[in-house]
Length: 288
Ligand SMILES: [Zn+2]
Image 1 (cartoon, rainbow, N blue to C red):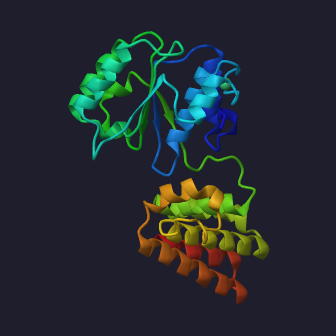
Image 2 (cartoon, rainbow, N blue to C red):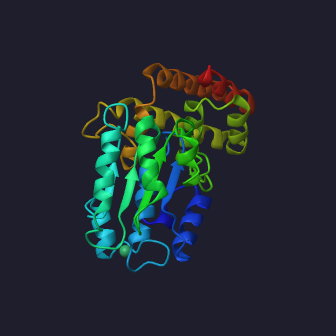
Image 3 (cartoon, protein in one colour):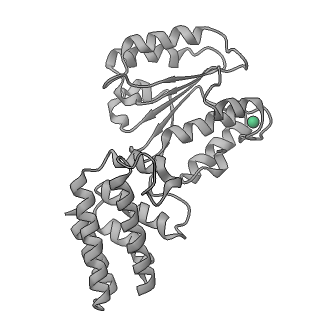
């Protein structure tokens, strides 16, 4: 996928595209945002746009570089992630010796460093040397759920892109809105924020029912996606990666609670209770 087709975080994407167009590509970036955001996909789209031979600030999706990246086998792109619970000193040391070599095909070595916030202090101190004196063309992209675990010296050497899970285009379709609401509940956002998001979505009874249906199907998919290995029961098979990523963050009881709250809300609407009251009541039960 190209940068401009990436869902959400439009402002960050714009900054990325502008940077590439202006040939002002930093040697270090930090993509910071909670675990519901697909930071890896965004980083890979960014890398593809940087390395693309044809595109103007974005990936063309057809040159050899784009093709390699889409197949996950670009020689100049190096991945590093936590082994066990952390990224250790030795892993960073290994990375540094790789970065001493020239790129194999292009003029950049690019590192996608996942779980950056799990780096041990020694690993961070070691990485600092690379951030301070990078070989020409080197780009490091750090992905982090919680940058508070990174030292100030690391942070000060990165261009920081803060990602927002809720800043995703306009929510025209019920599924997008349902995912947004479910994510806000999962992230334990305060009631008033969730209620404000919902206010526009539930102006009429039809819209409210539509949202309830979408929410229930989403939660149901979350509950079964771990077990439904052949994807025969899942409704949103096109969103299987998003479902799997999120389902790990849920306790089964939270999903059950949400589904029960949705069903109660549907009953209340059928009994002609006030729409706004019904929806707010549902949210309160979901976050309780
Ligand atoms: Zn390309």
